[in-house]
Length: 260
Length: 217
Image (cartoon, rainbow over the protein chains, first blue to last red):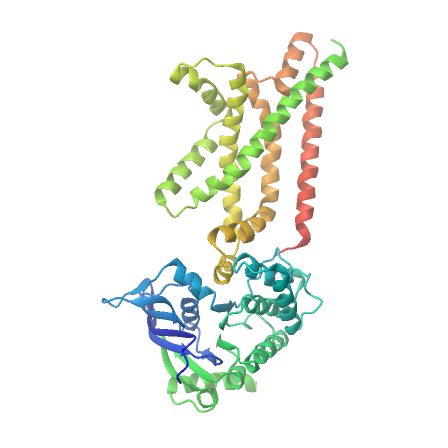
């Protein structure tokens, strides 16, 4: 592939005190690609996402968003962050959807979506409002613009959060277990929205426990365990026909679960 | 002394009480935020110094602080004490003292905001100042209103401590009238002033609380 990766993580190493949670992880995502990261709890997948979104700092490796270099290894193999400007430039490239939404409770749905484009990107209010309303409608939230998060269901809140991330026009959208706080019914409405984004070729990285969804929606699946990428490949292959024993046993537990 | 004269004297005293109350809030409400931020600072020296400040302010009587600040210019610098300084010293003492209490209320509020709010703001690109002013503080204010209300109502009555350095506020005036007239009427009227005042303050706080009840988290 000749296109430049939207994000490239190279040889990421991350420790919490003395526990190594990411051991030499490399991952690049190209425009239009949908990548799902699966794996057991504690495998490091959320930490990887938090490193990519600058919520955590890693000790070794490099991180690049297109031409924006966020961190690079020095001669001693220690990651050196380039500084605030690079951080801020990178934040203009990605959006993140949290497991527990993290909407601003004191803002209406519309204000949640509109505020950052106006306050951070200094865009014009009318133009932002038009885009925000369009995005909310696209999320199936027409008529909910003036509602506060506390008046919305979990599924609706998560869809507002997706609209909020999209309104900054990111090149890539990260999802950190976007449906883990939702019941099966609400899960489906959120997955539907993510699926429609995939059809529009939005570049996305999704950490998820929804295996069927990961298989159907993503181009590539990454299986992580113990801080390393155990296996990765085309979604169908990894989920339907895993090669590694660790992946097999992990996925078989899910299949048992779904047959109950 | 007829009742009308007494009432007008007490009203004058009440105006001074009101001034102490208002000036203290205007000074201590913002200063409290600053003290809270220093207390939570990553710089351990600053945070330790602030902790000592709060400890002294809360650990010693306001009456003593009041006298200390009032007399300090004379005993330390030999400056003659003026009548205006009585009021000035009162405000300085009250603001310093109340900002310590307010700071701890702010701190409890700030620390009660889920970390996800900061993370969401950070990812969306808000600056630290924007995050604090737009995302954190509005939520903090809603959460701390009951605790703040409590403290503000205590302040209504604490203003009477200015009596100790002879500021002519409501209590000082009432006591002077009672001593000179030999009847307790002035105390009863002063009590009514305080009670009505707290009643109004309670109503205002309840109104603010109601205005912020358009959301819950």
